[in-house]
Length: 476
Image (cartoon, rainbow, N blue to C red; front, side):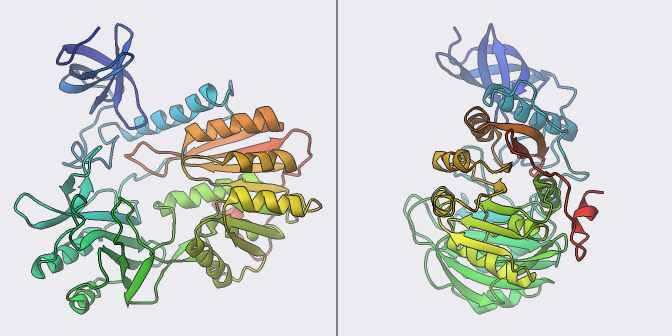
């Protein structure tokens, strides 16, 4: 049995969901930050438990062949990039294996029908959105950056290598204004202070910028001067305040106060345009978003006549891609502003066959199926949060048995759990699994799955309307 402060030698054979190295000492597993697969290291035991423990690297004795020098000097203390010390090909292998093992161990799929993970040619500067907290440094000066791993201690930083170029300049303007006006950062412990977060968003397709300052009040001293300074940034399109007076860790409040601009920026994916408000959800990696949606569209295999539902639809991005290739799409999302964005985006793109509902997918969809038994959905797209699908929604799917399901997941563990239910209780067969790396340098991975109902025939010839060459373009 290991004791606290024991020093041992470990070779690491795997990594956790949070990017910690996993090594075994006489069969006893230890989780160690800053160790990667293939490392052999001298480790200090910091927290031994009955069945597993934690440790800290004292010295790398034999580095993994996949170990690389992190590009960011703050990679170790910052909690944003858990995999920077691992080469990008090894990162992709780790994520692909994570999805595979979840499907095998949690989903009961002995041989998952997986395609190789789709990564990026350039896995840096891909993020189009950042929510950056403000804090106070040891000298009492306001600062901003990212939280250290497993803490709310801010690591001061303006230039993150994951953000698109230009975020650093905007953050520097915000900090300069705060210091000139002596604006205090919000203190989570006391509930005092004004500046909480800076939400910065870039529309890669249009080059437009959005800045939204989250504040613990309704007024920002010197707001006009700040707007003037920010408008010097080429493409600055929308500036606003978000009022958040809550005493919790929720980033955004419900009230927006416009300072400049129309209240949105316009992003494009393929040949579709999307207006994004500060509160709107949109994938943070636009290049890989196009890859992900292309796969979802491909897996839907629409012929042009299907009745399609898009559950947990957000701002309707996937819904609008599907609507170009079938007769009717219905989307459901619990967040009302997201549905407002979805309806506006449908109008913006001239799409009239997409209908959107505000509410819980696990309530709206089952109720519709009960009230309209004659209108069985042909295809259902699922894009739930990390907790996966609600059981009531899965029961509704089992009851109405759509011919095909397309499941887009940001958590392969809950994906595997839901697939097990759909397979064992609903007669579905998992035909295709495609991991997509949306978050290079981080541990998360998106996965899109295609499921067929075994007792229903389904024509799987992609439908391409004459007025849109998008499907054929993205599948080249």
